[in-house]
Length: 162
Image 1 (cartoon, rainbow, N blue to C red):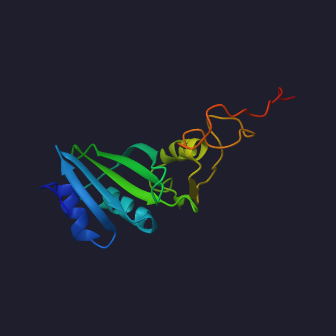
Image 2: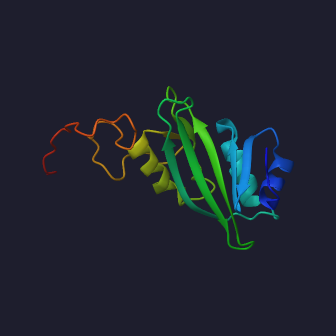
């Protein structure tokens, strides 16, 4: 692991060394990949530790690495207003069980971001309070940002609601 002098990554490695799979801080871009089963513990440490104080989840997204296993990566971008630093946390998620624990209990703003990832990638967030589509209609078949989603796929027609 290469923390390249990042105090955030050093603190994370000091507090939860067995949860961290890989780190890097190239050009000041502090990033850690952590175990999927430890994601809430890692995120809570980053939010609550007085040395870190990541009170803001600025983005939550996913990446599809079609052909690799685990196939998906859930990516969290955190910012500390108090400390003026950023970190990116990644967790890999398998294709046959695309799920990870929800971060809504830590940052309520994760609600819509997790719904967007569910809608577009099909990654399930356990213990999410209202996991349903946010951009596409309920009858939409599939998850269009997956790399194997057929771009010419026809979708069911949906009439107006009465």
